Amino acid sequence: MNTKSVLYFHPRERKSVLFLLALTVLFCLSEDRLAEWLSPEPRFEILTMESKENYLTGCYEVNLLTKKELIGFGLDSALASRWINYRNTIGGFEKMEQVRQVFRMPERLADQMESILQFEEPLPKSSEEPDPDFKSGLRAVQASAPAANTKEKPEAKIARTRAPIEPFCLNTADKETLRQIRGIGEVFASRIIRFRELLGGYHSVEQLKEVFGMEPDLVDRNAEKFLIDSSRVVKIEWQSAEFREVLSHPYLEYDEVVCIFQMRREGTADATELKKCFDAELWDKLSPYLE
Image (cartoon, rainbow, N blue to C red; front, side, top):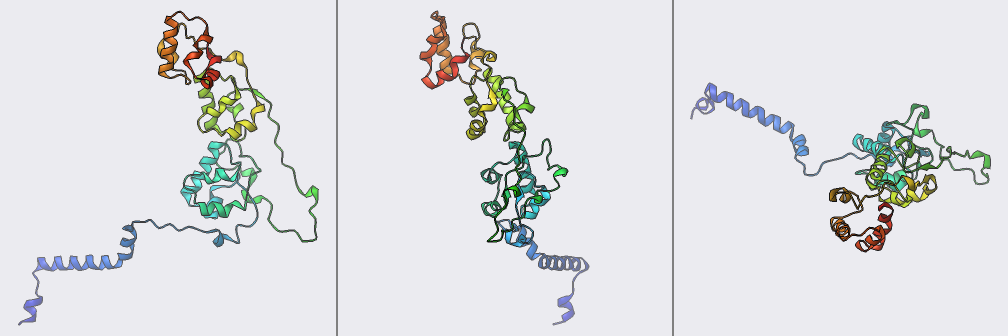
């Protein structure tokens, strides 16, 4: 058999063969990359605290850390951004449990960071990143163990105090006033004001616990800072208002409003007689809003 006749290709066939050879070579060179793309589980390179052992020494002010410093701890760029956004939203971290609530914060990484974070400095005001005047969250005390026979002097500790917050009226406070409270940021201040408008004013500090996302402990710790002016509570004009106006109050459901209007048609004039339309707990909350 003539070898030439076997290996001979028409010019058009020759181009196709060369094209297939080129594809084969490219496939071999990119096989590892292709396998990585098709991998069902994404691969993440997680920097552990051990790899940063020389860098992570001492204590770090959690509310002063920059995005660059967080990445140095082992957080990726997206997680560092979520950390800062969540910190700004709640007005600053106060405890480690809040750090763990950052979206997709690895539990292992949080455990490793817990021993080096401290919660003493407040979040710098009106700043997405810590103020340059603070220089760095790494400026905190170096965690070096004192000598066994050396006692720490009382004056070595510097007390960090904040200016006391004067009590203010909860029914007239604006966002800036509310944000004086550590733990209440821009979002919570807006929610407090919005809920106040829907209610017609607060008649009790306990009502703040009903604001979406508000921690009861935060309200209890700062209860003495909130003053209640009951004269500013807007009453529900249940004897003259339309059905939908009464139903718009956040404490009232459809069946309860139907009961109120039924009693109104029967000639009820005393608001205390409406008590039978509600359970005891709801009546205690709603009665200050009824004429």
